[in-house]
Image 1 (tube, rainbow, N blue to C red):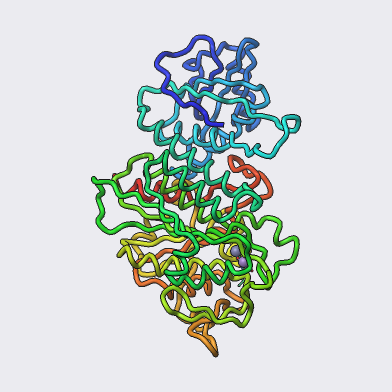
Image 2: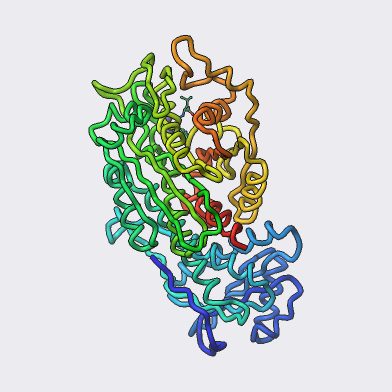
Length: 478
Ligand code: BES
Ligand code: MN
Ligand code: ZN
């Protein structure tokens, strides 16, 4: 549900209120009576960060943020507090709240609302009315003179983009085929103002995107290649930032079939595509003066009479020949074609985002993504900073050339798998082969989809990467 966020103009007298404070704050400013102050202090001593006060006609919440710690940690605590408050609001089935910051910086207040809204996300499309427990919150008023309408607009665009990406990831393959994914991205373009072009199978064939076509051979549904462009007249850059996102709408592994329990969550294999699409739409909707392009190659990966097979040699879009030794390493096949296609744009920087390897996920789990860079030291540092700020953190792995030796093939220019070790890195070295520009590869196999709720990230698609890319591009403008 979309929540209406507004700037409150007057301090309300009768409403559900949320006071944002820190340890040691004078609670008198929060218009609490003495008993309430005692109760709140006691609860806080018991380590409760959100204290609920039942005033019968309405409820009040007192929320404690961190006083100490780095800026990044404080912001994340506020997001988590936003989520914790959302849970209490849901229990009480409240629809409207007014936030009154007593002792919190503007960016902390915004982080609190971010957590509140992202925690309020639900994917209910396939739930019958009886099994639906709807979140109730529909309107948030913020009473803080510092906060401007533009801040709230930015927050709205950002959180809606995350929810858009989550919806796409949560949609099963039975609905979200490659063509449907392209259609959803195209429809979103009508809202955002970004230009969307969808290349269909015949065009993909004439472009000789051999990797994408090879992976698609086992499918009854055609592949797509979606191009989203945001090129405002006032752009600060001439050469675009290009995002590339993996759009495998379902990954069975193909003939190198995955074991059943590894396949359960593979509707998430287009999470990179969803994230880059959502991010560029957010950038367009916020009218950021930055020239950005997003490329999303999409298909499912299945075994079939005509499926590509281990031992096959595929001629890629740029002419490189690839010996396929594992059809489950399909992501790099479709991304490679998009990366060589990206050369047409003479890009400032290309960032790809992909649920690429179980290896990345095993190495660092679900709480961060693996990143690697090629000719982009400075941009990588800036991206990492954005990651820390929005708490979509990047752990850097090395891109040493020795790893590329593991991709040597007897019969072709490259083989599509490196071996048992260093899987996330050899995958990145494979992709790097198709680039000649500053490049960053982000493997989101760990954080893209979770099976246990993690604060403001509910079970299922997390929308990871959207806030990262949005903040990164926003940081170019300031
Ligand atoms: N989509 C998977 C990677 C994945 C694993 C994403 C777990 C999300 C969660 C990818 O296509 C894949 O199958 N990778 C293989 C590569 C291997 C065959 C070299 C893997 O990681 O096992
Ligand atoms: Mn795979
Ligand atoms: Zn995959």
